[in-house]
Image (cartoon, rainbow, N blue to C red; front, side, top):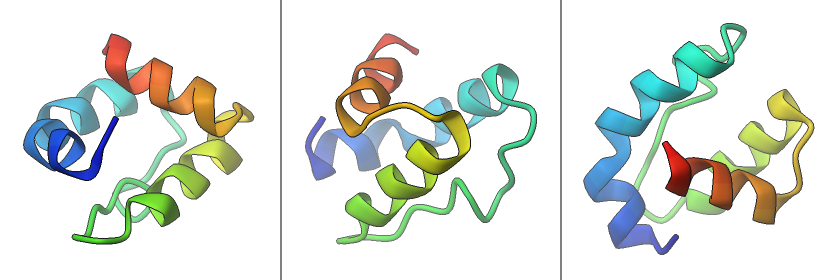
Length: 61
């Protein structure tokens, strides 16, 4: 998922991610332009998934 695609869908994805993982906080899900890698890293830590699994999971939401 590229930066533009992530940015465009982020508000919708954020809500679905919180439903799937209740321990995700707003800080964990904070998206800033150019910092997609940091976001993926935070999600990897919280979910225990690899980067590829996180990307696939976000695409499936």
